Structures are given as C-alpha cells and as structure tokens.
Image (cartoon, rainbow, N blue to C red; front, side, top):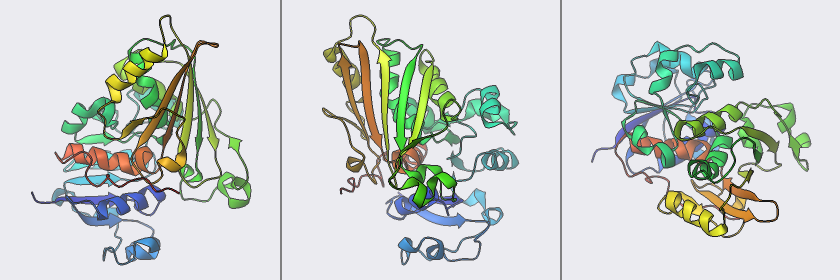
Length: 344
C-alpha cells in the first residue's frame, strides 16, 4: 500500500511539534509540507532542534501548499483562523483534521456565545465529525472534516459518557475537576505560565467561563442526555498531562459491579483506553495516546467518582489527531501510536 501524503498547517507550536514527531515515525505517511507564516524559509530543525536530521523539510507559507496533491491536512491553527481557511477552500480538496475549536460544538449559537465571534461557515458545522474515535468511529471514517477534541473534554467525556448513556448517574449537576500541565496553554508566553509563576505553584483559572464546558456538555448530548457540568480547570507545575476527577450522584441500583460491567462494555476492547484498578498517574501515560480510567462507587456519599489521566499533547491533541487521520484514510487505527508511555 502506498503511503498517504500529509501536510501540517501551523507546525511551530507544541501540538504541531508533537504531530511532527509522530508522523516522522508513521509507517504509512509521507510528510510533504509543513507551514509557518512567521518562519517561512527556515529549516524545520531551526524551530524544533530536537527534530534535527529527521527531515530536510523547509517551512513554507500555507498558501504555497497544493491541497489537491495531499490526502490529509492537519490544521494546527488558532481558533477563528481555522474556519477562515476552511471557508476559503470549501469544498475541501483534501481531508482535514482541525485541531482548533472552530468545529467542535454542534451548536453554532453556542460557539458564537462562548468564543465571542461569528462563525464563518456555519453550514459546515453539522458535517464535521467530532474526532473521538471511541464514540464516533463510524462517522470519522467517512468524514472529510474532523474536529479534533479539546484536551480537557477528552479527559472528561471518556469517563462520563458510559455513565450518562447507561442512565446510572444524575445529570443535572456533574462536577469535573481537572488539572493540566502548562503546555495546555500553548507555546506563546503568558503571565500565568511564566516559569517563576507556574513553578512550585498550583492555581485554578477559567472558572465558569472555560470554553471546554459547552464542549463537554454538548458532545455528551450528541449521544445521550446532555448533562449540566461544573467544570473547574487548574494549572499544574508540570510540562504535560491532564488528571481529571468527576463526581456524580448515583441513581438507585448502582454498585461497583454495575460500574465494572458498564466500563468493560464500552471500553474493554478499545486500543487506547486502559481501565485501572487504582488511581492513574500522569507519568504512566506520558508521551502516549492512552487514556487511563479509574472508577469507583462511594456508598457513603452515593457518588460515582472517576479519575482519568491523559497526555494533553497526545490523546488530548496530536495523538488523537493521528488516530483520526488513520481512520479517515482506512489505515490501522493504532498505526504510528503504538509506542509505550515514557516513565519516568
């Protein structure tokens, strides 16, 4: 089988860097173009020194990429920029995996409210597949445009969806308490990710206003009753990883055995979901595409508690994007993603 031709638009950030690392070792991919407007003309290793001697690619402007000669384009562009690009090139001449938030929400009105911008091509929103293979694999396989999920939503939706679909928890007040490494804020310098501020510190941010709140609620609502989620994100003084706790009131009849049966039913055969008997840790998923999930029923408080761990740059971004690319192109879903986590 010939290798598929792939390009990355916007490869100078953390997600773009991770995509490059994965695609270089992918057995079925030929990376033909990498773009950057600000760094066009520079060799790739000038921006990403850790990739020296892995490629002779030179960065180029996105406008110079012939989209008709590639199979899949990864859009690692900011919100708002991605949808402008998609509008300009609609109908799309190649398959697109968009890593921004521009096509993640099924409701255009909700997108415009939470992102505070008018959507450029609202008619395309219903056509975009939400790129969480464990839940939407069939639609991803036939999609021209896939909206790669947010990192926090991935860590929350995967443990919550089986509980909501099976009707074993109350959905009117779910608490999602999540902690992310600083790479989740992107490569551009910010006050709260500046080393003296983030190091030896732990802080909450985006209370009540984080854009991943409607993504969690509305994505679950695609397959079941949409929950009401209280989402609280926090910044950890680590480079990468997300640890997420969820707390839900159990409905009558819930036991630990019931929960075990539910999670085995949904995820027992999933290649990148690992059901844990003890609380997961960030170091056990680092640099991998795994999502580790622990679940328990607290009889004293009548709550179902889940704890999940992902690498925010992998299953939370680039790894899941490659998983989606594999599905869209009829490749082995796990291709290029089979390396073990890095520990320590």
